[in-house]
Length: 261
Image (cartoon, rainbow, N blue to C red; front, side):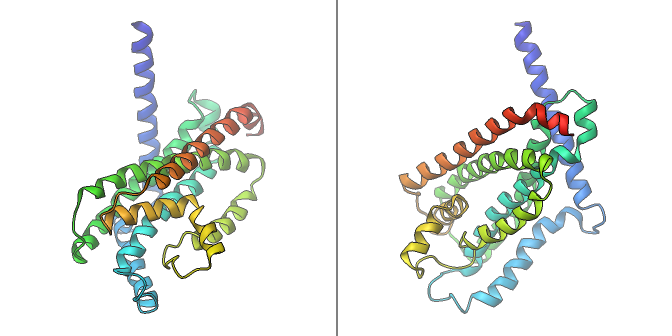
C-alpha cells in the first residue's frame, strides 16, 4: 500500500512538472507578442485564407471545400512538426535542470509534446469556427479525430525521443531535419489532391504516416466516414513502432547523453 501511494505521489509530481514546463514554454513563445496565445487561433485562419486564394481556383474541381481540406491537413501537420522540432532541443535547453534536479529525462521531451497539444487545442477553436462557416454537418464520426490526435502524439513522441538524443551528439541535425520537414510536408498532401498523381507517387504518399493521419481526419470530419481497417492498422504500426524505437534509442544512449551534456 505504501509503495502504491509513493508511486501515485511520484506520478502527481511528474505531471505537475510537465504542466509547469509547458506553461513556461508557452509564455516564452509568446513573450514579445501583444496578442499572445491568440496567434494560435489567428495563424491557421490567416494561412488558410492565403492558401485558399492561391490554390482554391486551381483545385476547385478536384477538392470540395478546399479551405477545410487545407485547414484539416495544416493543423495535423503543425501538431507533428512543432512537437518534434521542439522536442529536439529539449535536453540541451534544460541542461542545468537535468544536472541539478532528479527528474526523469523524458519529462522535458514530454513537456514539449504536451505544449504542441495545447497549441493544437487553441488551433481547434479556429477549426471549429470554419466548420460552422462552411456548413460541415456535425456527425459522430468527428469524435474519431480524438483517436487520430492520440496517434499523432504517440508518433511525434517517438520521433522526438530520437531527435533529442541525436541533437546532443550532432547539433547540425537541427538543420538537416528542417530540410527533411520541408520534403515531408510536400509529401503529406496538405493542399493538393492525391487522386491526380501517378500511381508510384501516390503509393509513396499513402505510406507517409503524417498523410495517413491527415486523410483519417478528413474522412471523419469532412465526409462523415469511418476510416477503413487498413488505415487504423497503419496508424497503429507507425505510432507505436515510432514510440518503441524512440524509447529504445533513449534508453541505450541515456548515460552517454548525461556525459555529453
